[in-house]
Length: 346
Image (cartoon, rainbow, N blue to C red):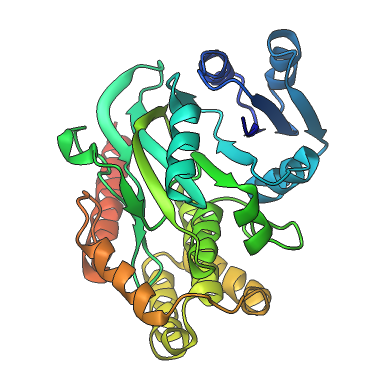
């Protein structure tokens, strides 16, 4: 039986840990080792884990180094051997008992490099809402990520086991051989990306190296997630641009992506100057590093273009086109302005 290492990065996660660890104890797969890295939490996260999860392995950082760098530390600490697996698990996610077993089974049957299950929303009280968070993910030519089924009711439509472009990093399993292929220097996650989008970058890189990803609906997890403020949304968008520069094919980078990125940066600066300026600084300072990290692809551009088309055909509530996204952004900004005006009059 292949060992599965479950890597959890905590940062002020004390409220989520009881449900997360209780679910891990119920896993039906026998050979599981939990490894945790705490990113300098100021709450009771570390104390809770010492008292309630004595079988885990814990690394404590003195500063918050971000999601990707922390997982890279955990991967290195695991000393993964051939045939083993690493599962990235967010502390606000709870796995159903067969989650790990089902992913290992399907990855064994299909030879997939990485896989993920059906992610459903739960509320702040750890209660299921019946609404999907993600049934796999797709990506558009501009690097925009689509969560299949996002904010839709969980129906039979999402019960089909199939290959997808990528899956969410909230509960993603990847095999040792895929890690070695895309991260020969040990940098599974791009440490330039402090937070958000690094899981998409990993999946895109793995896809370019010829690895396949599977969505496994019989592996079910509940994920609370969080709401991004303006600064975090800007950071996520900047990481998207960096991932595009690393992973899009050169023809697309030069003729499509760079012009579109420049247009987006100008538009963001006009709509939200603070976010736009921060984005420009982030991209300008890190674009060179992203370009230097490009790896020669093992699949054709035509195959990748096919995945972009596939993405546009997937069910979701997310706006797909650029203009639709801009209208959504303006609508949110307008609602915030109205709410702010109402608040000022009270």
